[in-house]
Image (tube, rainbow, N blue to C red; front, side, top):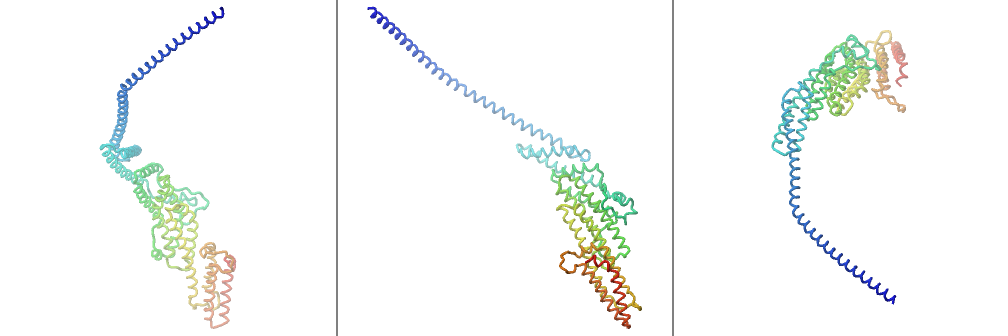
Length: 484
């Protein structure tokens, strides 16, 4: 009985719990359905809100975009106005002279170039097009004004260098009295003369640099060439250097010609060692950094003066030959050859190729003239008339002259070897110089043989030959080894 009562109680308890569980599930389902309805209601309301807000958002973004466009437009307008104002301010400066204030003038040119770049890349309105046209007009006027200023300053400061100033730069002499004969010490340090006052150089350099920016540098090159070329010509003219022809040299007396050659050698040294390097240094300072441009300016400014200087040497080489002329030619050949390395250095670069060629051509012409003079001398010996032999079989004046002539030639042995293109092939053949000296001696022997036959006394003729040949052998014996 007790067990049955316990079971019944347990069953009743389970039923009660099941009833509570069913009630809980019913309430949970009711809550779920209520929540779903609430979520659905919220969704419908959010969609309505979005639909209502969307036009407002579009209007807001449109307002933001309009504001940004306005801001950009304002910035563009401000830039246009700023550059228009700069053009108006620059106009009054450009129409004045650059000499009143070069720095401010060049700054104004820079502002105009900036305005030109702006209006070229921003073609946004008619006002900009009109401003661009006005800027171009002002830059054209500025270029012309800077050209005039460059010409004015360069002309004002370009003066011929005085002789005394040049001589002070050479350590071997201190006055004009020494200028003709004295020679500079090859190892001495030379101080270059001042061609223009240093205070002018920065101004000229600024003008030259600005001409490149404005595209008018070719006109500046022409101005520089004309002014510096004429100034250098005047300097050389003060030294006595002008263009001469072979006819003018030929008409000069021998003493006058010899003095002119000595003076020419001196002027050549002054030009190569002082004047041309000074012109190069000046060009480098004014056209700093622009290598091809400054080389062209230097070559153009010095070419005419170089040709005037070399014309005397060319004229001497082309003038009528005489036996003694060979020594003058060899002197000139030696000096020009000594200076050739300095000529190559100062006229370095492709733009100066013609200047270097002119100088090297003179060296070749002097060498050819010296060679031809010796050949003509040999021919003249052969043609020497057989008359006027000595009555006692003594040494003939021709023999004495040729012996001394060859001795003097040996003072120029190294130069003669270069002229006759000596080589050391060791093939046993005679070199050009040995062949030429042998030819002169052979010509003397031939002439002496003809003269010996003029003696009615055969023994006296033999004595004549012995005396003359012995004189030649004694005169040149010690030189034979040096030329072989």
